[in-house]
Amino acid sequence: MNAADPIIQISHINKYFGSFKALDDVSLDVTLGEKVVVLGPSGSGKSTLLRAINRLETISSGSIIVDGHDLYGPDEDINRIRMELGMVFQSFNLFKHKTVLENLTLAPIKLKKMEKGRAEEMAYALLEKVGIRDRADHYPVQLSGGQQQRVAIARALAMEPKIMLFDEPTSALDPEMIGEVLEVMITLAHEGMTMVVVTHEMGFAREVADQVVFMDDGAIVEQASPDSFFDHPVHARTRLFLDQIL
Amino acid sequence: MSDQEKIIEIGDGAAIPDPKDKGLISAWWIALIGTVSLLIILPLVKPDPYARVLSFVPDGILVTFKVTIASISLALVIGLLTGLGRLSKNRFINLIASLYVEVVRGVPLLVQLFYIYFALGRIVRVPDIVAAVIAMSFCYGAYMGEVFRAGIKSIDYGQTEASLSLGFNRRQTMAYVVLPQAWRTILPPVGNEFIALLKDTSLVSILAVADILRRGREYASESFNYFETYTMIALIYLLITLILSKLISNMEHRLSHYERR
Image (cartoon, rainbow over all chains, first blue to last red; front, side, top):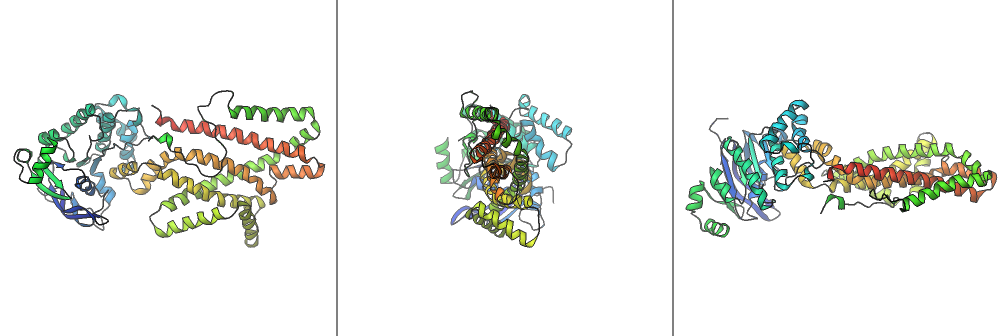
């Protein structure tokens, strides 16, 4: 793989739920270190697109290549590819039966055969980074939504992924907790992480995105830099969406 | 919707005392004190036959426990496999598991006992107690399968997705993430099944297995003290199930630690 090649290559993918077309001939390239923010009304297919990147959603046709690996290649191990793709969910999905620390160490210990002491050391460092080290021994249910989401980000980072996928990470949060999660994500972006983010946070998109993708009815309608996207949207549907949301 | 509200009710198992019920006037305490008092007072007041019944049945209690423990252990293994089979996307495995559950649920336990005991007896000669354990676990494995299936299904699919996204495969996800959580949901109905199974082992007294009930019958038919004998038998069963139900509810409380704020 060439260094200039995109780390994620999505080519002409289609996805049907029964007769409903959730993704309509979507193509998208993401280069290493790039931050792509996907916007769009609900039901536009943006979450489906994101989930297709780590095959939580299977596609009906087309191809997705992540870091040189074809997601549907016959010789590819999807579990290995997923280790390179951290994912953060709208509903956090922390392991409820594990403490915060254990949430972070489970996968490195079991999948990377990392020694427990080292895994915990790394976990503490990550918890420090997301500002929640003092809650290491708590169970997820004892944390606020914002804290849970920050732990979820740290859990994904514990596998040292090359790419981070965010599926509406702040949509389930109370307004006063959105800031703390976005702050962590912005830090991560500044460190050079490759990120694909589905969100409704326009401020975040403007500040962080290299590329804004607007989807509607399962298709990519407009794709541009944040400045031209927000200030000079080309398509009528984009303008309508921005009028409604801003 | 909280996890505490997820209740699986399967079978006609014994009522489990509420772990929060610490009062001395709970139904459980009244039953326990009543049972223990009767078990002490009756033999004291009328040693013959009450005390003699008590000295006659202990080896039966041991047999009942052996059959129960062996059957529940086997039934748990069968149940886990059946539950996973019933959730399997593999059509063949799914069909086999479902067929097993359907058949077992449709045939009375006593008939199954007779069938396995005598059918098995024609093929291989196994000790009576082994035949009894096989029959009991074959039957209860199907019920356990439904308990496991419901317990696994009660775990939010987000947990599975989070695990898969980290790179765990399906089997690891089941072992590290889903089953440890499902176990808490599963424990109350498994406890009920355990107690129900213990009571149902009295059926094996019909086969030549010398459990509590059979020892009682032996004593009664020698002494003709039917009323006194079966009074003591009933009290012994009651004492055992009361203690077990308390143990199970305590265990359930301990397992729920991660849900407490």
